[in-house]
Image (cartoon, rainbow, N blue to C red; front, side, top):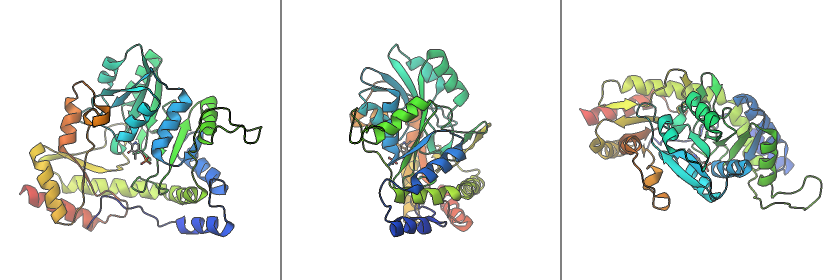
Length: 360
Ligand SMILES: *Cc1c(COP(=O)(O)O)cnc(C)c1O
């Protein structure tokens, strides 16, 4: 079976993890934590980065650090992974869904404008599958309406908008290092904050709200969202190879684009002024009725695929009124193809061959 994903662990991961074991620094203190945070911040061009234990709590912590709470509305694309929406709901705020754009699959800025109300506190931009949102438009909307901006960059490590790494536009931004993300720590995440005070609050909240000057004094309702030194050790080894991993993923996407040309489908392409990191190499078939039969055909040929996310407004616990025709359409036509960095040109060619055979 060719899987959709498997991590690429060909660097110093084992050496660094063994250092944790040999020194007994296996918990959430140890040198790899700050080394990973510093290397990560440097890579994306952010001053403040703090590790957490997954990408979901990263979003929750970022929202809490901004003071998002009950009564607030947070605008979010309906076409996203459920964690973007769940974490908004976990603060007590209400997610307000917006539609996506057909060409980019990213949030539609015109629909963001339509959904702003007096209760809107923030916009969450999700850079879906590795392509950035329209950050010129979104930052302009937030500025005009005095809204906070959160970037969910879980799928967008290595993604640039006009040469600037995503995660550096928003008031806060979050990354995930789950096993299938572009760089991984097994489970893990990162919170970025522009403002020093917001960053301090995130660090305080992730560590049980413990006072920095008084032992075992906890002055606020808080969380244990800390990453372990072992995870950070893996993360540091991953970031040392980040450029190689991203370059390889971009190469794989180009192999797919060339191999799938002329078929009744569209690849999820890079757009002008962007650098697509291709977390997932994705396609949208022209005919939604072809989606499941194509996935079945690939499965029978030993090729794993994933459907694009169900739009959040269709999930039972976040059901919402409204019309989201583009998100609905993309969700009915989209497929994520095998996208892991160690895929070979031969494997991509085999996958494209099976897709051609299906349509022949
Ligand atoms: C993966 C992902 C998350 C959550 O990350 P975990 O590390 O799995 O908790 C959040 N948002 C998006 C868009 C994701 O793809």
